Length: 309
Image 1 (spheres, rainbow, N blue to C red):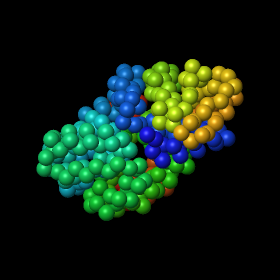
Image 2 (cartoon, rainbow, N blue to C red):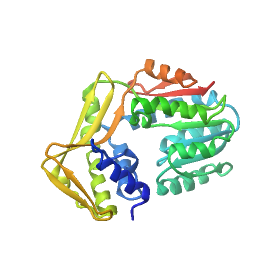
Image 3 (cartoon, one colour):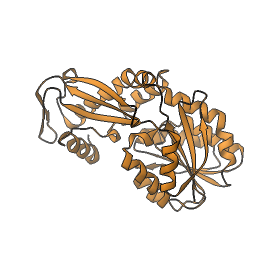
């Protein structure tokens, strides 16, 4: 059964002048999360592999910057493989006090809480099933916060949202709190196409399956093509569906008809790529200081360690 949030998000997106499906509905406790896990294992999907390399290599160096009695808050915890590297380093240094996994997927939260409680029985594990913004308001009183926002999730926001997100983080943290921000760097377009054109296709088409199941809709994925495009100037990589023909989709659960014209687009996602200079500027504008930057060996990806001033 669809949640109010899911229903409202889909209706709002598909009835907008420029149709879109928000990325917040990609993840669920069924096939959506499974497709995403498969995506992370694909060798062409470099962001996950590059960030794993960074954390395998630099977790101890990152830990050296942090105070004692750290509470790690994981914004979009997922299955936690990268987080585990950070927690291991903090635990080894005797600095780990608590872990707060934050996710909208109940399945992820149950699994990660169970696994990490076995690995770190001495710490408090406090899962929060919510979006980032709601969760931050709940945990802002925690001392010595170390926020994780990994996997270039930041790049899924538009430019205005990116700056506002960093300002939001500043407003709900305290001087001396840290944020580890995973960012995909600008690179050759061919590498990006290998990562996004084919590897993301099944995950994106799953959106139609979920809408059909939860809203009793009649989307036919054969009536849409999956496309991507990249702007080297802005660093924005976009993916979208294009309707092959004029047709109507009916959402029986809400009694809503959605009209599609031939060649009409449904915007389904973006991933901005960054350079150092723009991140330094955005961080400064938000009252955050870049303490250090950690790269993978190819410099495809970077984890920026930011501190609340």
